[in-house]
Image (cartoon, rainbow, N blue to C red):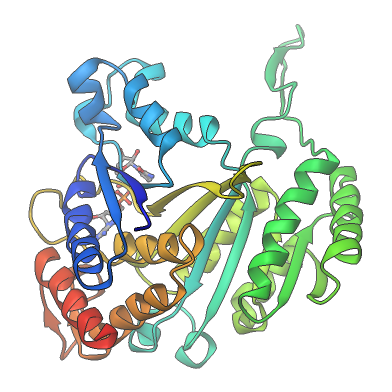
Length: 370
Ligand code: NAD
């Protein structure tokens, strides 16, 4: 039987509450579909600091590196605001991203029809929206050197960040975007600022060459990133896959995310390079939201972002496409029925807690999968 190793890092705050609902879905899949998921669980963030003084232990890092995929909840909270910088909760997530070499961040922006009215845009602009932003995660201006503030000695200081990209970094992120587009509407829009940035000129060239060499079956368009931001709020449904660098991706994915409503709805995936022997990519799946200390422990957190992150895991790490589709459909059906957690509550709907929402999705998933 296929064995699929999943390493769970629920973390802090609402992380464990949301992860508990994913566990139930995994148990069902193993029992009814023989998916062979083998689970192990570790500590990350504040709970890891409390247990052993670091944001993630070496033992748990080794398990994350060995697993087929990592499911991550959330980290942080006021309890750990004063801990030393290098062991702050977020350091656990950054270490995972770095050691697993997760260079591609995937953020879908899907607007479930039932939530179209909750968007800040007109419902007809966002209803049925399904775009995927592929953001380069380990390069660009967030990591480029020099990165410093220097004293100019005349009462002035100079802050310097360096935007830098090498060919291979652009090639590999473009490759991820083209490959994902083939599983969707087969369209990629690459965004940069080639009009004012040399790294943008190179980005544009390398994406064009990569497309020509390996992915000419995919439709490619280029757009300046500022125009892209404008188009995202003007007519978001024109896009399928957007590929862009670390800085623009950070901003554009937040803009796209808010088209679809609440933070509690947004999943994400971060992928590394394929293993030379097995062809499998290292991967970490996590909701976009944080640990939500204001509602932690109250049983009211929306588990959908965590469950939808697991759906991405089924699709991208295990190629269980039918199961992923069914799980996403189960979420849509539950929303259609008017079942809502507090963060997405609307008039005439039924407000439920984390467990009830998780169980409603599981029941719908079972009905669809039967
Ligand atoms: P947050 O995402 O935790 O919460 C922002 C607001 O959205 C809160 O009002 C919260 O109640 C609400 N919210 C978030 N997720 C929700 C859900 N699933 N259901 C219902 N409501 C939800 O962001 P924040 O308040 O800025 O940060 C809180 C802590 O989380 C901080 O310590 C921060 O550093 C950390 N954080 C962690 C991550 C991560 O683990 N990846 C990401 C962002 C923030």
